[in-house]
Length: 319
Ligand code: ADP
Ligand code: MG
Image (tube, rainbow, N blue to C red; front, side, top):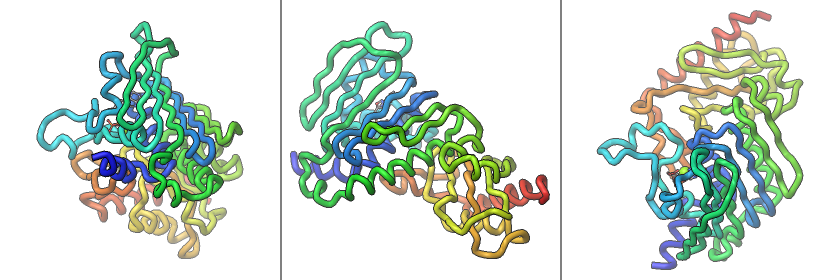
C-alpha cells in the first residue's frame, strides 16, 4: 500500500543525484541538443532539467509519471536485452513524484500547445499551457514524505559536488551537446558543442585539454592524457558504454594503464574519457537499479580493445 509504495520509490531514487541522472538520461533519450540542470539545496529543495528534445505528445503526458509506463520498450520477449535507450523501466518519473513533488512541462516541436503535469504522491493533474519545444522537469522537496530517507542524506554541499561531477561525466561522454549546470543560482559548468578534448577543457580546464591524445580504434573512442604529464588519480578515468557513463570494471582501468605501460611508471593513472561501443546483446545494463554497473559478456575482449586503442593513440603521437 502507501508505505510500501514510498519505500519502493525511495529505492529507485535514494538521493538527489539519482534524480539528476534519471532526468538527464531522459533528456538524452529524447534526442536533446541542449540540456540545462539546476539544483538547489543539494537537490533536496529543487532539481530541474530543461531540454530541447522530442517532448511528450499531449495524449501521453498523463502516463509519464505512472509506474512502468515507458515509451521505450517494444512489448516483445527479450526486448530488455536489446535496449538502445538509457531508460527503459518507466520508474524514474514515478519515483520522483512519490518521493517529492514533480512538475513537468512539455511540447513536441510539431504540437501547437504544451502540456503540464503536477504529480505528487497519489495525485496527478494535467493542464494545457504554452511552452517552448522540449521538456522541463522540476522535482521539489525530495523526501519530504520520507523522513527516514531525508535524515540519511549527505550535506547539501557534498551532494552538490557529486552532482557537479556527475554532470561533468555526461559532458565528457556527450561533448556534442550544449550543457549547463547551475547550483544555488551560480553557474558551475557550461559547455558548448565540441569534441572530447573540448569537453575535457570544460570540465578540467584548458591545461588538461592540451595534454590529451585522441583515441579512436576498435569501437573505443575518446581521449587519453599524454603520458609525460599524467597524474596518479583514478577519479579522472571515465568510461561509457553506449552513451551511459558507467562505473568501470577495474579490468578496463587496468587496460588503459597497460596501454601506457612502456611509457610511464606502473600505477600511474592517466586522465581518460573513453566511449565504448558494445553490441546491445553483448551487455546487460539491467544488473543494477541505477544502471551504472554494466555486465559485459566479453570483458577480457573489451579490455584488449581498450589497451590496443590506447597503444595505437600513443604510437600515432610519439613523444
Ligand atoms: P523510462 O525513461 O524508463 O522510459 P521515465 O519514468 O524516466 O521512464 O520516463 C517515463 C516516460 O516519460 C519515458 O518513457 C518518456 O516517454 C517520457 N519522458 C520522460 N522524460 C522525457 C523527456 N525529457 N523528453 C521526452 N520524453 C520524456
Ligand atoms: Mg528515464
